[in-house]
Length: 140
Image 1 (cartoon, rainbow, N blue to C red):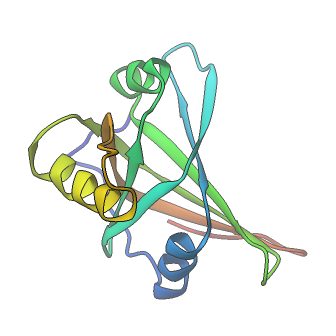
Image 2: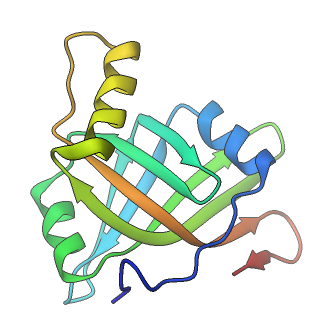
Image 3: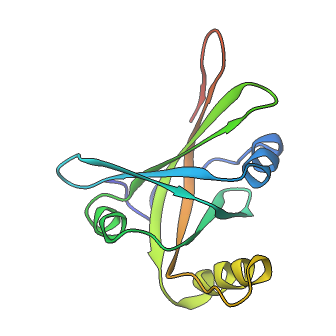
Protein backbone atom coordinates (compact mmCIF):
# COMPACT_ATOMS: atom_id res chain seq x y z
CA UNK A 1 0.00 0.00 0.00
CA UNK A 2 1.34 3.43 -0.92
CA UNK A 3 1.87 5.97 1.82
CA UNK A 4 0.35 9.33 0.87
CA UNK A 5 3.10 11.68 2.04
CA UNK A 6 6.19 9.51 1.45
CA UNK A 7 5.84 8.39 -2.18
CA UNK A 8 8.25 9.96 -4.66
CA UNK A 9 6.33 11.83 -7.29
CA UNK A 10 7.20 12.37 -10.93
CA UNK A 11 6.52 15.23 -13.28
CA UNK A 12 3.91 14.56 -15.96
CA UNK A 13 5.30 15.47 -19.40
CA UNK A 14 3.42 18.32 -21.10
CA UNK A 15 2.36 16.09 -24.03
CA UNK A 16 0.74 13.57 -21.67
CA UNK A 17 -1.04 16.37 -19.75
CA UNK A 18 -2.42 17.73 -23.03
CA UNK A 19 -3.67 14.32 -24.14
CA UNK A 20 -5.14 13.58 -20.67
CA UNK A 21 -7.23 16.74 -20.84
CA UNK A 22 -8.15 16.19 -24.52
CA UNK A 23 -9.53 12.64 -24.34
CA UNK A 24 -13.25 12.21 -23.59
CA UNK A 25 -12.72 9.82 -20.69
CA UNK A 26 -10.20 7.76 -18.75
CA UNK A 27 -10.45 4.46 -16.88
CA UNK A 28 -9.74 4.70 -13.15
CA UNK A 29 -8.61 1.44 -11.56
CA UNK A 30 -8.35 0.41 -7.92
CA UNK A 31 -7.79 -2.88 -6.10
CA UNK A 32 -8.67 -3.46 -2.45
CA UNK A 33 -6.74 -5.55 0.05
CA UNK A 34 -8.07 -8.75 -1.56
CA UNK A 35 -6.55 -7.66 -4.89
CA UNK A 36 -9.90 -7.59 -6.72
CA UNK A 37 -9.58 -5.00 -9.45
CA UNK A 38 -12.27 -2.41 -10.06
CA UNK A 39 -12.29 -0.01 -13.01
CA UNK A 40 -14.70 2.84 -13.72
CA UNK A 41 -14.90 5.23 -16.63
CA UNK A 42 -14.39 8.88 -15.61
CA UNK A 43 -15.51 11.73 -17.86
CA UNK A 44 -14.55 14.72 -15.69
CA UNK A 45 -10.82 15.08 -15.08
CA UNK A 46 -8.27 17.81 -14.65
CA UNK A 47 -4.51 18.23 -14.38
CA UNK A 48 -4.03 20.03 -11.06
CA UNK A 49 -0.27 20.59 -11.43
CA UNK A 50 2.86 18.93 -12.85
CA UNK A 51 2.60 15.99 -10.43
CA UNK A 52 -1.12 15.65 -9.65
CA UNK A 53 -4.36 14.94 -11.52
CA UNK A 54 -7.95 15.07 -10.32
CA UNK A 55 -10.78 12.70 -11.18
CA UNK A 56 -14.17 14.28 -10.58
CA UNK A 57 -17.49 12.49 -10.37
CA UNK A 58 -19.71 9.93 -8.79
CA UNK A 59 -17.55 6.95 -7.93
CA UNK A 60 -18.73 3.58 -6.74
CA UNK A 61 -18.61 2.79 -3.03
CA UNK A 62 -16.20 0.02 -4.02
CA UNK A 63 -13.67 2.59 -5.31
CA UNK A 64 -13.96 4.49 -2.03
CA UNK A 65 -13.47 1.29 0.00
CA UNK A 66 -10.54 0.21 -2.20
CA UNK A 67 -8.77 3.55 -1.68
CA UNK A 68 -8.99 3.10 2.09
CA UNK A 69 -7.57 -0.44 1.87
CA UNK A 70 -4.94 0.22 -0.83
CA UNK A 71 -4.42 3.66 -2.33
CA UNK A 72 -2.25 2.50 -5.26
CA UNK A 73 -4.25 3.43 -8.37
CA UNK A 74 -4.00 3.39 -12.15
CA UNK A 75 -5.49 5.70 -14.77
CA UNK A 76 -5.54 4.46 -18.37
CA UNK A 77 -6.30 6.43 -21.51
CA UNK A 78 -5.60 6.31 -25.24
CA UNK A 79 -4.63 8.87 -27.83
CA UNK A 80 -6.35 7.63 -31.01
CA UNK A 81 -4.40 10.04 -33.23
CA UNK A 82 -0.99 8.73 -32.16
CA UNK A 83 -2.17 5.13 -31.64
CA UNK A 84 -0.66 5.11 -28.16
CA UNK A 85 -2.00 4.19 -24.78
CA UNK A 86 -0.96 5.73 -21.48
CA UNK A 87 -1.17 4.54 -17.92
CA UNK A 88 -0.60 6.82 -14.95
CA UNK A 89 0.34 5.04 -11.75
CA UNK A 90 -0.16 6.90 -8.52
CA UNK A 91 -1.41 7.24 -4.99
CA UNK A 92 -5.07 8.25 -4.69
CA UNK A 93 -7.01 10.06 -2.01
CA UNK A 94 -10.79 10.53 -2.00
CA UNK A 95 -12.17 13.98 -1.08
CA UNK A 96 -15.79 14.90 -0.31
CA UNK A 97 -14.97 18.35 1.09
CA UNK A 98 -12.04 20.73 1.47
CA UNK A 99 -9.92 22.66 -1.01
CA UNK A 100 -9.24 19.78 -3.44
CA UNK A 101 -12.95 18.92 -3.56
CA UNK A 102 -13.76 22.60 -4.24
CA UNK A 103 -11.34 22.72 -7.20
CA UNK A 104 -13.01 19.64 -8.67
CA UNK A 105 -16.52 20.88 -7.91
CA UNK A 106 -15.91 24.24 -9.58
CA UNK A 107 -14.38 22.53 -12.62
CA UNK A 108 -17.34 20.19 -13.10
CA UNK A 109 -19.89 22.97 -12.53
CA UNK A 110 -18.12 25.08 -15.17
CA UNK A 111 -18.68 22.26 -17.68
CA UNK A 112 -22.06 20.98 -16.47
CA UNK A 113 -23.99 23.45 -14.26
CA UNK A 114 -26.18 22.02 -11.50
CA UNK A 115 -24.07 18.85 -11.34
CA UNK A 116 -21.85 18.90 -8.25
CA UNK A 117 -19.72 15.75 -7.93
CA UNK A 118 -20.12 13.20 -5.16
CA UNK A 119 -16.34 13.17 -4.71
CA UNK A 120 -12.96 14.09 -6.14
CA UNK A 121 -10.02 11.73 -6.29
CA UNK A 122 -6.60 13.37 -6.07
CA UNK A 123 -3.88 11.24 -7.68
CA UNK A 124 -0.21 11.97 -6.98
CA UNK A 125 1.67 10.51 -9.95
CA UNK A 126 4.44 7.99 -9.19
CA UNK A 127 4.93 6.43 -12.65
CA UNK A 128 3.85 6.56 -16.27
CA UNK A 129 3.73 3.83 -18.91
CA UNK A 130 3.40 4.53 -22.62
CA UNK A 131 2.11 1.64 -24.72
CA UNK A 132 2.63 1.70 -28.47
CA UNK A 133 3.48 -0.78 -31.19
CA UNK A 134 6.94 -2.16 -30.47
CA UNK A 135 8.80 -1.93 -27.13
CA UNK A 136 6.94 -0.27 -24.25
CA UNK A 137 8.33 2.74 -22.46
CA UNK A 138 8.15 3.14 -18.69
CA UNK A 139 9.26 5.98 -16.44
CA UNK A 140 9.34 5.94 -12.66
